[in-house]
Image (tube, rainbow, N blue to C red; front, side, top):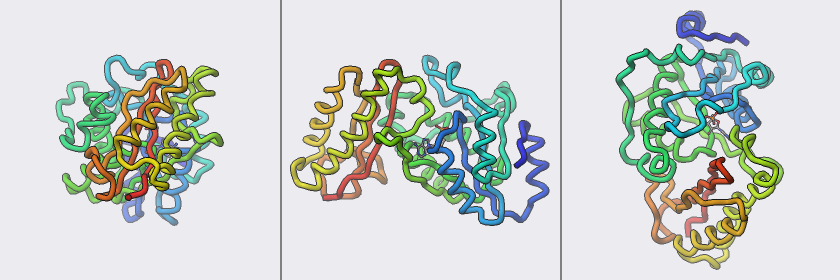
Length: 284
Ligand code: AMP
């Protein structure tokens, strides 16, 4: 495995592999099994060619009062995991390497990113689109893997690829969970012991809602979200940021079941830590 820290080194490495199929797994580091599942997917997709990862805490996707400064950074341990999971090339640039000091272009997706996390974190998806577009160019990626854990991000990136004609195949990976169902996240490390004990309520509730819809107990999105609110808020440390049932293609709110594929997305604060999760729901 080769580790490069500058764009120049990245270009030189890629110049030596002009004909290889190149599959990228972009990350912000503090790697866990969610990330390594994407590395495995990238490895599989690349076959005998090139599986690549980036480790970069991207400043432009954090709001002014968010956790950019305190986001966990553990490069040594991360590189070991990359190597163990068959990554050939890692780009781990220092903060100043990626953006020009007076960078003045960014990519703005104006439909899918208005609600959900985009509504709560203004500018977040501009930062995501801009960095992902830069990484696609820098890595000359043929394919890239993204987790369904960040469902809105996956949808926004697919849209960017379609609308800006990137020749990059987007490969989704399923959400990897702890044994008690909590979706793995670098931010889980922020949870206090008491918050961590209550956090599994998130996935338990998503599963419960999906079952309620299957059995006919919950017959409308409104009823399902109300049930979810009551159940999650029974955990004393949980505070819902948003909970919505949307059409999984358009991310528009659904007011009844039976049209399109519904998806339930939630963001919940435990103390200062904001966790997100989502599940597909039965379509009728
Ligand atoms: P991040 O480092 O949080 O920016 O995430 C990098 C990639 O890993 C994104 O495509 C995420 O969707 C994905 N990811 C994060 N957590 C998980 C998880 N628990 N399961 C699957 N993919 C994940």
